[in-house]
Image: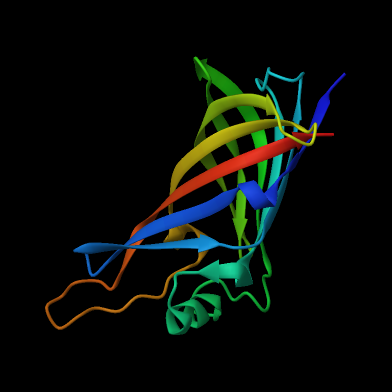
Length: 176
């Protein structure tokens, strides 16, 4: 029988990094997201099913003007496409506590196959009797693959926003 897990949002985070002007990195995060995992049992996540969604309007780079621009039609068009979603197509163990998660990522109206790496951090029963598991998830995507095309060029010829987005999520799930 499958084990069902629900994301614990108070002990999870979804972050990203992107190059700015080629010379530095800007970091950001999403404040609102949800997810579920269905695994074979309490500790075997091979062939698990993962579903994750992010509220696009919850983007936060600690700079209101930039966040408003990212929510606009130049980027996420969060008013029209409120959710960013990921649904796994396979989860494979690739070593001690390490997995490759392949799946479909949808941003705006574009769905592409992506590969994420997940490191299993272990399991524990918290002070309230909830059985939890934790993962560190990383990946890279090209924003232009998802229709996030906006950019500008400086007088010196540098692009303002890099194409590669580095994703890093620390997530805890609670057994149901």
